[in-house]
Length: 143
Image (cartoon, rainbow, N blue to C red):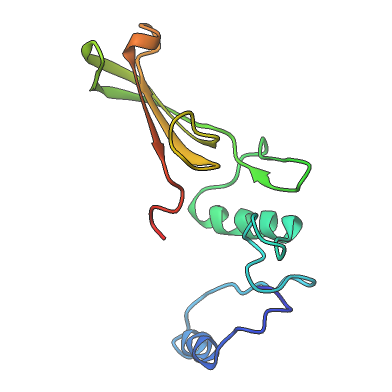
């Protein structure tokens, strides 16, 4: 939470107290110089150092952020592509093919009318371009 955030409601405070009363283990972190929405890279309130540390803590619970994560000139944190070896099948322009790999990444879309998209490529590395299905999802799809 940003130390300068004006929005921690009385309900949030009550929730934290209930966790303590119930003996639950939790971590609370406050970031000096950060206000509300400091994770939002497209807002003036974005604080790259706090956001990177916050993501590290969040993903540390789920899975660690790789050391290969980078930041651009604007300070936006870029996670490396997630590449997975898989076994399955997909239907492309030339019919069904075996899958060997899935790559998930965040980038500029080729066809979706958005500045950025969550891209998922399903492919067979041995067959090249004909054995590829590409998906571009609006990053706000869950909002």
